[in-house]
Amino acid sequence: MAWFARKRKDEIDEALPEKPSMLAPHVGVVSLGAYETLAAEVGFYPLQLFKEQLMRFLAEEKIPNYDYGQVDKYMTHMAEKEGKIWIWRPLRAKDGKLGSENLMGHTKKNEPDWRGHGSFYNGYPGYSQYDKFVPPHILRLVKKISERFPKLAFFVSDYAVPNPDPFIMMMTEGIDPIVFGVWDEPTFEEKEAEE
Picture 1: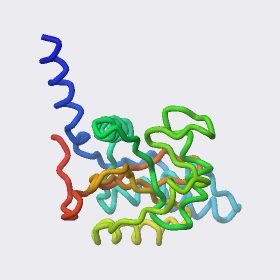
Picture 2: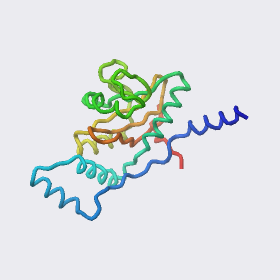
Picture 3: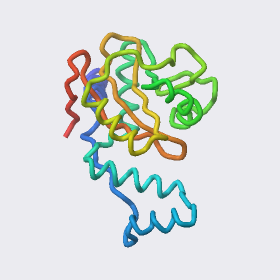
Picture 4: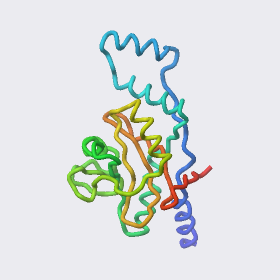
């Protein structure tokens, strides 16, 4: 009976995270455009305004959001099956500095010398820039997002096996990571999330 229960848990863990949701804006009755204008006139640009602009942009562009906790659970399970850990690698060289300052708070431990699942530390070679192909549809999304929000950094999940089927996420100081894509290696097909 215990074997059956264990097998069922493994089957569940191997399923991709649930179908991604669309992020919803938070500002209700206030027109965001009017607020942006007024805030700019007084030189006020709070983090909450940045978050709202980002949420609206992602909703308008229909860019999905995978639940970070589910992605972490899935990646941890897949890596542990191979006796590995998974990490976030910066997509671009400029993304590395931001990751080392901000990503550690979203791992299972928040110690600067901890190197476990979902971690990133810019000072170690193993956490270097992502060095594999990224599908064109993902690069187009990165281009579109970074043109509108240049302070966002992008990271790709990775672990030491051939074709690990990576996720991509964006983040910046003060916002939680937003996982917005996953693909099948080496075919670059978009992976289907669980319904």
